[in-house]
Amino acid sequence: MSERAAPFHCPYCGEEDLRPNETGHGAWECAACNRAFQLKFLGLLARGVQRNNVGGEEI
Ligand SMILES: [Zn+2]
Image (cartoon, rainbow, N blue to C red; front, side):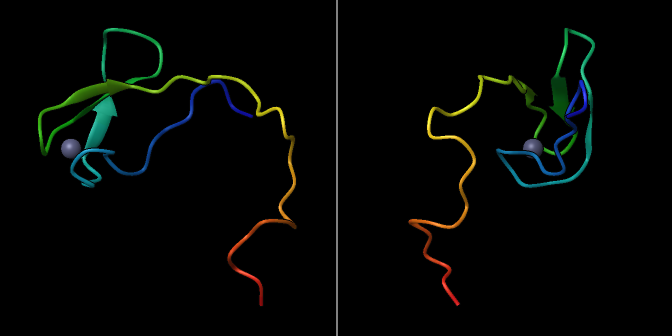
């Protein structure tokens, strides 16, 4: 897990023109919609990592 995760798309407008914001750690700004946002790691889920249940993508 890297220290800073870079978002690929703006969560608000979906554009990819993102650049790091100088305000702080994990802060990004979108040049398309002029929004600034911050990514924050909240912690691990209590259920753990299980990808083989309760999924809607059974093949
Ligand atoms: Zn945007």
